[in-house]
Image (cartoon, rainbow, N blue to C red; front, side, top):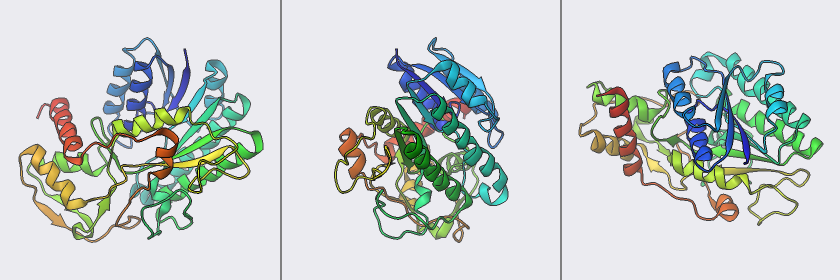
Length: 333
């Protein structure tokens, strides 16, 4: 039985990943800090669902607590570490930057130290498409420079990539970094656009449309993303690149991989999908761009497809409809 240590197991993506691993027969140890950045009850419900499986064990604790992760890894000895826990959110990083230092920098350091002491066969860490920042060349490819982050959140995630690379080089730790692109789906985060839009529309309240609607996002359905993560577990960085598009380091068993749908969707088309799924027309409040945000994201999926084969790509209308069905069921509206 293979063993995975997953940080952020009560989070949106972590929950779905743990479900998938448990369904495939893995033994999973999950760690989550249960921070109050958003509704803790939602996180607790996710863990409660995972605990229905005898293969899952949950630990509540802060990633950045000295020695906590190391102790868990020493005891559990996982084959794979998947580090998803982080302080998320572009706009919140303007208001509470210290929480990003603690969770994203110190927390990642604790994970790296644990992996150094008790090396897994593969270490996989979450980054974000936000690291591409001010880049204007699209689709975003892993080989593009990403030096001009536009939010402190993105800066901490880029720093995490660099920290992991140094450990991969110094200690020979096989490491894959994920850059996620606008993940959505059932059990999603309340601070993200889909959740906020659906809640407002069902309550008859207006929704805020930034940059006057001139936005595009590479929306990635959560189950498609998890499929990519699971396939990458066995795509351990080796000595040779898979092509000139590979981000494999020349000095370490380390690479960064985009996980996105590979097709940007205009924001207003996204809103139309929500209107169709809810059966209601949204009252739209058009606003200027927010600080730290970018007008578009678009993943180049060449590398991940070379490593894992073609991934599923859920249509935005189907994915949004599934979220609305979950939302109505969960909140009984």
